[in-house]
Image 1: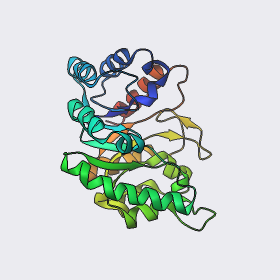
Image 2: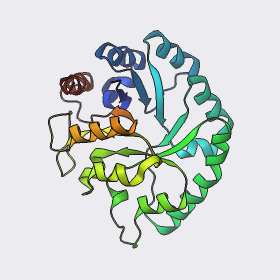
Image 3: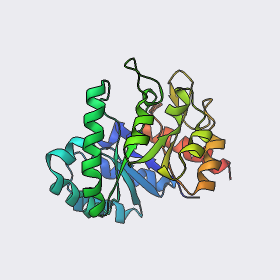
Image 4: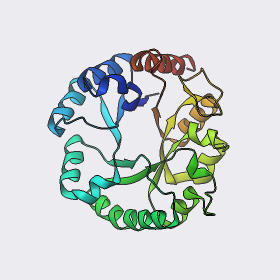
Length: 239
C-alpha cells in the first residue's frame, strides 16, 4: 500500500526548507505528496525535487482565489508539476450569499479546469457537516448543486459526528481521495493511532474503494517530521 502525505503536516519546516521536507517524507516511505503552498518556489524547481526524491504529486490544497485572479498562470504552474487535482481546502461560506456565490464560481471554473486536464475538488472541515444558523448544510449543498469531487477529511467528519465509513459509502464515486487523520472528538488532532477516530476502519474502506490515502497530522509534536514518522510507522503496523 502506498501512502501520501499532506505537506501541511511538516509546516514547521516547509516554509524555510520545502526541499528538505520532501526529502524527509520520501525517506520515511511516503510515495505521494499533497502540497499546501509552494513558498515562492517555481514549478520547475518543485517538479525537480519531486523527481529527485521519487515522489509523485497527488493533489494540492490551493485557494480558489488563484483561479479567479490568474487562471492561465495557475493552470500552467499545476501542469508543470503534473498535478491533476486542484483541491480547495475550505472557503468562507458562512452566509447564504457567500455560499451561492461560491457555488456559481466552481460551476463556472470547474469545466474550464477539466478542459485543461485538472479536476476541481473540495476538502471539508467539521462545520460543513453541521447545519448553519441560516438553515443550510454546506456539504449537502455542494453535493447537490456542484460536480466537484470530494477529498473527505475523515477526521473532521468524525468531529462533526459523522461516521466516516458510512459517509464514504454514501458519497461513492464523488470521493477521489481521503485525509486519514486521528485525534479526539473535540478537535484535538493527534498522530495516527494516538486518538479515537476510526483510523483502521477508514483505511480498510479506502483501500477497498481504491481511494488515494493522504495522511495529515496537525500536531507537530514535538516536530512535524517526528509526528509524520509515527503516522507511517502505525500504518505499516497494520500490514
